[in-house]
Length: 85
Image (cartoon, rainbow, N blue to C red; front, side, top):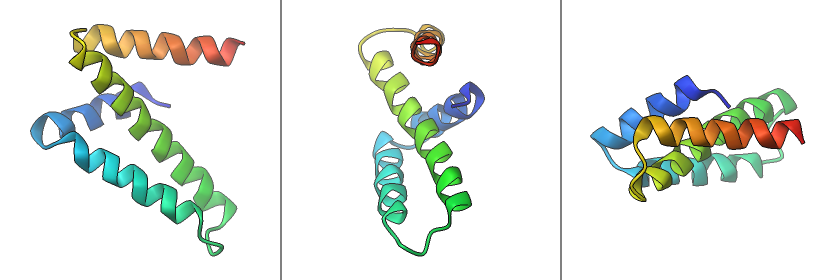
């Protein structure tokens, strides 16, 4: 997960709609089910999915009243905490 990409996706959500990100996640998840996808492609899709899902998590926090900066920081702390375990 990369915070700059999550922030960039959040800019897209501000200008458009969260539904686009949710639909992109659905499409990428569907692609992973194809027997024609190579391992390298699965790695890229997985990275894209983690950034898109991260953006949706940050959006959820922002909807609950947390500032964007605080939501980004909190999300990355959670991610780092799960990696440390």
